[in-house]
Length: 454
Image (cartoon, rainbow, N blue to C red; front, side, top):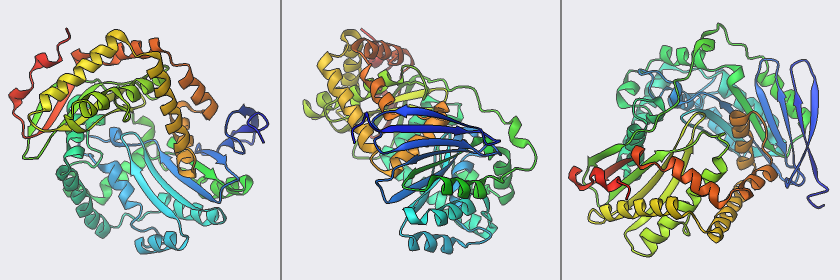
């Protein structure tokens, strides 16, 4: 069957049973998507992929580190840990044994804006997977002894980050570039907060922030749609939080990227550097131009920074760029690790390449190569159920709708040389640039005039 013959259908069902089918054409051959909204406001997005033998399912709560108060640092991440430490029906050991007996995988992760629990199993085990995931999400006991034990686990996780210079410099840089904003905090929290955390604090945070209208369930793989709808509605459709504490909770204002230089001295073999610029919100109209700019600048082995800094001059083993987007802001970060003597040369080369890109723009052949790289990365990342599941949820949270692969690829194809040059001039602003250095380097090594434009 060719792509033109395959027609996907996207259906929106609202409380009360109304269903509005909308045709969606694209390159998702033999796959189709569906969205339903349960009566309590929980959104369910599904993509059926009948050629597979597995299914992945996740529960996304639109709550993360940025929703924590000053005395709640790390609460979102700690709650994620505690959900696996026993429910009313299953002990922590039984949860582990059950997922292993299914031959599947179950885990969770926390970001600055979301908390996610997911499970992946064979298609015939979807019923057990839904029951297990709902039990962990709704009925965790938050036992006091388990809380005390898990405090030590998270404290070790914090220490582990500080022992890894690549992770630690990223943490230091986030605090610097977004200082004063919760998005700049470590997802893990801090040691002082972890040591004093109590069960009542966790339950208050849970009641305050976890709401059906903030919840998205994503399912991707081979499954019977009607069966899964019934099972999800039975497991998640009765959730009705007591009280209205969450209705008054408002997220803080959008983040503001701050410039400056911070040097953190530490006895290491290398200097680890982060250079930060403002980015774009996740749903910004110019996001595809920014993605292309980021990939062209430092997104792979053919990128300008990798070629100039590593391949031509051998000044660093690792150099790359990353675009981090939030609901209302973003940061573009360039990371490099080099010897102490080479650090200033690395920073100088990075600044030169950025200025060259802003002044002259990229060449057409370079843009086409980078766009093909982006499209390939997207397609390869969506070949499995896990990638599709994540995309479904992120689309819903960011834009409130499904973005087809055809739409995504077409948006990348439309990016022009001029688009990249314009977005580069807008976001790669040296006046707001920040830099963090970790390692055997003196504060005097980097001067403000290193960022001065010619």
